[in-house]
Image: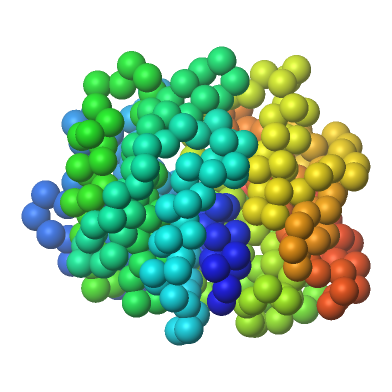
Length: 312
């Protein structure tokens, strides 16, 4: 898998609903995070949220997300981490309102990692961030703490929670909270994680159309009058930095939102995205393909988006 393909899945994060029956062995003082191999120490007042998967402080807008994505055997961990570290302070980060410090190299759970802290501006609001990205033998993992500005957990304390993460021998069970019906020819990823990933055919790569469904990390409500701008902003922040061709209001699974199509840079030139707003947070359903390699995939993307069901 190319660096771009890895970052696409990582920016949205990606895999499918799959229940693993074996319970992981949990180290003393640690809690298993649903649909991942990872275990975290849970800060006072926070609890596991299977929907992320990760931790939340109920009603406070503070969360810790553990996003796990598969790697192919030929993936270059050093190249991925270097590219990602550059992206933490680049144009893509700025488009998402991120103002992060220069990333530091370290090891987390015995694997190479980069870590940084900073803030993210969401409209008039500001949240604090701590981020760790690491590469295991077969996974790309992003651990992201999002802290309400007045949360009692300090940014260094949040970073310490992330850098102290451990990796268990087995994957914890869990449910994403949403699902879609694959379009003809599309396959679900067999790799559980924090998002739903479908590809045209069972393989992945730059020349393979991909469709991803992911929930927002934060649970901030978006006012009605701000939803169109928020959806367009989320579209512009997608990998390949697409520009908008068309945007239309939609309602899917009882959720209001916007369906957007456009063109990106590089091989994944044709881009589709629907952003659906929950009472708290939102869902992003997005797809990419190379029109020089594949026929129009927008009908398949639209069909999968409209098949969305909420499982809790």
